[in-house]
Image 1 (tube, rainbow, N blue to C red):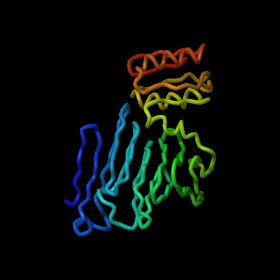
Image 2: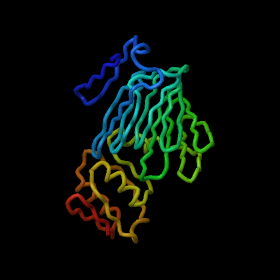
Image 3: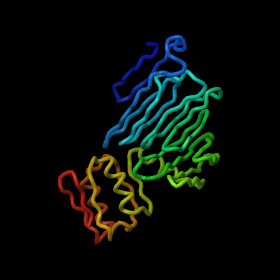
Length: 240
């Protein structure tokens, strides 16, 4: 209809909306598109309003083919970095597991994987309002909001380098337990991880490029985590 979808050679989707979109697309119920990025992949998307979105592995983003109403709303399950096109008349909202992130134009990262049990929103530029189970707080650049399934919503200084590591092509772990580290590793390398209970609390740190092989990453982790052993068996990694 009034929307042209273009796929660029470097793996991006761009939605171009014609000036007659209001007459050709229902204002009440514009068609929705769902973008799913599987394990081991990343993708870049330009929404109909010009907002740019970088989408991490194992992530689903749901959005209308055109923003025809009074606000711009998308639904996120996973992780994405947003550079929102400025439009004060139409707030941009990200809905993620009961948490609402509202902005008019800004740069921020949202990590909302179901397996993590929380939504972490880190602000790099501009300002955003976070609402979760009736509680609302505002963020300024350099801070993050963490909301959890038990209703908690807190504001704290953010680790911008860690929040942006995935977009910049590397893992960054700082004093993280094995289980948390291997969640990210499993999403990128599309593997299943089995962790013995007695090693689940071991804390590690380090930086690893996404371009490294799984074997190289496990080898480096093995050196850091001695006497813990990482054993790869097909599509499974056992940590003993």
